[in-house]
Length: 245
Image (cartoon, rainbow, N blue to C red; front, side, top):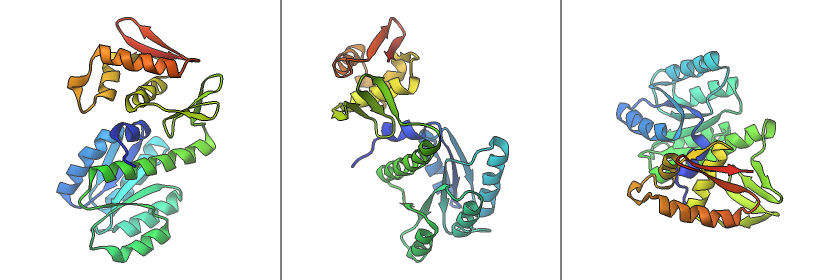
């Protein structure tokens, strides 16, 4: 299943990520990609620096990073030693390992440590999206167990699942187009606040801004209104739209 940018971004946009990599060019290139997905991206060039930044982040925010991405072969402290240190501090930390094709000898030890997600060098963009989608979903599920629900009631029998971006009516899935799903993600993110036209255009036509136009948006909203009849999409003249539920 192909995962698109906006599906991943809807999960990661408020998250903080720590990325440890000793190859300067790879660090710079990957950091730019990660920066498009995460609210905060901090970097380190070896395990000792990574551990210090991990500890410093907690001291300053009283929170751990949501996701840690680390290389294996690094000076001063390698990735495996770093992972062990982090798990001593926070056993449930979500960690993704970046590895080269010539490092299979580490795989068994990493799996035994509890690592589930890997990125192979050189990174493939679709693979990055897929791995972050799985890792962010796992993190949010763990938070969900403690603090919140992913299902938002939009009226009698109508539910929106934030984790999967699926709309249900009386436990039956309501099929949405890609743009209808993206539009719902914007509305849910903003709750009852106004979703501006620019924000909607940027979300629906992120890679094809020349396709963005008010008439096309009106058509999408018209179809969506028919599918969420128990909720109202309100047109706020000159500003944008708001989902009222």
